[in-house]
Length: 319
Length: 261
Image (tube, rainbow over all chains, first blue to last red):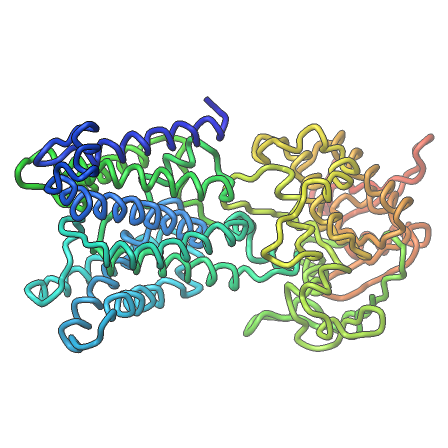
């Protein structure tokens, strides 16, 4: 199936199925019939399970999945590297570390999590956007991984500290969902608007200059949206790795390499994958559960290795 | 466009271009020829402000290049570089559309119909939806040419456009350039390795050696065996081929130590 439209329909269909299943499945199974009963007032207990536990959780995972996948796509275009992802480059772990530090040092600031997270993401970015690193895709990956390990290492020093988040959607409230809706929709919208820049950046900086446009400006614009999106997710649920690489590369395989069609597909597919991962995490070790981050690592790691084994994969094209 | 005493060197490197002065008469085809490393490509890069002169000034319509924004300059001067790296797959039409960026702001969507004309000019209409890497070298070269033409420049600069092309594509490209020149009267400045091609297509030649302009003038005035031999540091003979005209042949270097008797 080579038509992008077909894939869009398929993914949207799967999303609807996944959302329905997500509402039904859990410690207690709630069938469609029971759901109707619950909401017509005959079973307020189950209505409350759906409204206060499952629905916000599903909404959050959908939003986070879309945000992370989009951040991944943007980061891959801005760094011109198909492996660049905020979680691998240390952006997410820096954001997470700053959240922990911020809450420890200045616990009084309300709504501070997102700002700390954003500050952390920008901090990590400062190490990544030197001209030398931008020119050399291998150096970028090495520096990124070092940053990621360093930030998460430092994080572990404070892991007992207040508010360190776990990369799980367990216990998500509507408050967090509301926050995600605001940051998510604004960030995703911005991503769609500037998605042509991701295409233009396939040309060299010199080429773009002779077309009268600044590659640097576009890169910084894209990276700002990338940090905004991934900081939003980190502030809400912590670090969930690999989404950007796994989802975006599948999306690329399905709809091609034009970022204006790739970006929306990455959003939908990211939402789907994250919801499926979270629902699986809720189910496979009942009555306990696995954090989405853990499952994503278990799936994302091997996927990445498979991807790199592929002969045709040329993720770190230098030049 | 006029270059006035333009010198260029990279920081803490030796000078590539020495007080170079020349004028591009509007609507002319000019070829820059000379040995490797003479500074030919550097001149084109200075004209597009990819590089900035270390000293001297380049003017366009009487105003220094620095008076233009990069976008204004790109509306007047377009370049087809020798190497055109692409970091990811792109469709032909999308590459050509990047040329239209000079007439749009970055958030606008560039409609397909804006580039149909340039695709047609370069015989790419049939290939518009193909990924550029699926094209042959000659076709790819035409894509970059179309992108440059989409800028609707007054000056079109081409850096060794025929180097990697076989004879068929070379002739193809030269025909397109001639056509463009005839129909749109744009000034074309070429860096060419093939001397005979340069002599055939140009109105004017700039001969460059070691960053200096050694000679310039019409091709007819440049058929000078001694001059060419000096510039290229090789034995040159100009022969006459019926149906073609004068043809410059590089002879193997003389080897005075070996006797052939």
